[in-house]
Amino acid sequence: MKKKLVAVIYGGRSSEHEVSIESAKTVLDLAEKAGFRALGVLIGRDGRWTAADPRLGSKGPPLIFDPADGSLLRGRSRLKPDCYFPIIHGTTGEDGVLQGLLEMAGAAYAGCGVESSAIGMDKILSKKLAAERGVPVLPHVLIEAAEKGSLERGLRKAATLPLPLFVKPVSLGSSVGVTKVKSRAALGPAVRKALRFDTAVMIERGVDRAREIVVGVLGEGASAASSVCGEVKPKGRHEFFDYEAKYLDDDGMDFILPAALPAAVAAALRDRAAAAFRALGCSGMARVDFLLDPRDPRRFWFCEINTAPGFTSHSLYPRLWNETGVSPERVVARLVKIGEARRSARARLSIARK
Ligand SMILES: Nc1ncnc2c1ncn2[C@@H]1O[C@H](COP(=O)(O)OP(=O)(O)O)[C@@H](O)[C@H]1O
Ligand SMILES: [Mg+2]
Image (tube, rainbow, N blue to C red; front, side, top):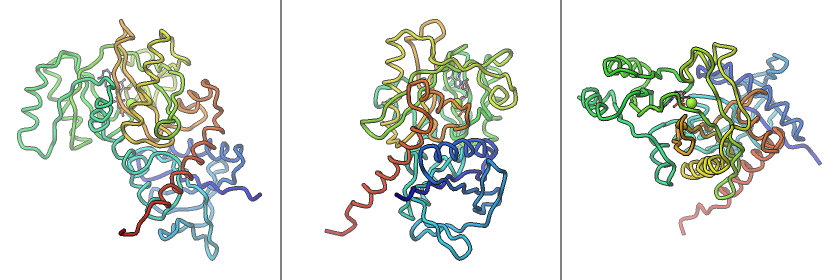
């Protein structure tokens, strides 16, 4: 039987271009291990698509994506991937934009669809939907740059929230623009700083010295399953998971797998992670992050959902599944299968008027 062709789309025009290259190396290896032919499709910083293999550092011929059927034109030849595997973090890759392009072409692709990717990027919308399904969330105040008087009103309202507070851009990642606020005087400057990065900013009740628990979710709809819980611990002088602890400090964090938690708490977290995944209508994969009261692990809150979690060899998502007994290549095989099944289900929907 001819091997299926999986096209791993990586790179992209976001600030997370380099992380994506690392993830793509791993996913290409895993796709081959899982029995597929794997093709690397690099989206350059200039937006152009090229056939490339990040493992060899080699760049091949330009590719042109045909929106009519999702095939790739390479010179005079035409390739038709059975499934795409987008592994681009951040804007245009993780927010539903790339997914929309693939959707237009009727192509099968791994991971979340347009709506769930877009909602997952928005911390307030995802909190709202998760809360509707009984996932605990922290109270927050929203400030929108375009609304007149929003900043003053927001700062006044935030006076009812106890310190510490966390100020965060609503649709960003990597802790860019995030500040832990420990005094009322520091709130205004923190909000103004966050407004440099996003047009909407949230002031959220902080969990002081929170424990951070991550759960992987894999599957589709009611059959979505949760991995064991992992705990990430920012190390040393990092008081929370700031940008530096994540990317600049080689020794910025510890990952404890599985997290040391009472069995009932771990079960509740896994259950709530799957509930959040379903609430957003996610498909394939997502990583759900929680904050825990350091004094009482039974008190926990949803922090955010990541629909394009890192996929490097040391990334949390594949390690969570490995610990749960699902090897990384099986995760990739499952994601491809789910993507293909979703495309077939969509193709069966009637487009007739009657
Ligand atoms: N309400 C909160 N209480 C305590 N810590 C928080 C809170 N919100 C965010 N943090 C800390 O800030 C980090 C980044 O916030 P997060 O919401 O995950 O945004 P990002 O998308 O940038 O990762 C978290 O990993 C955590 O360390
Ligand atoms: Mg985060």
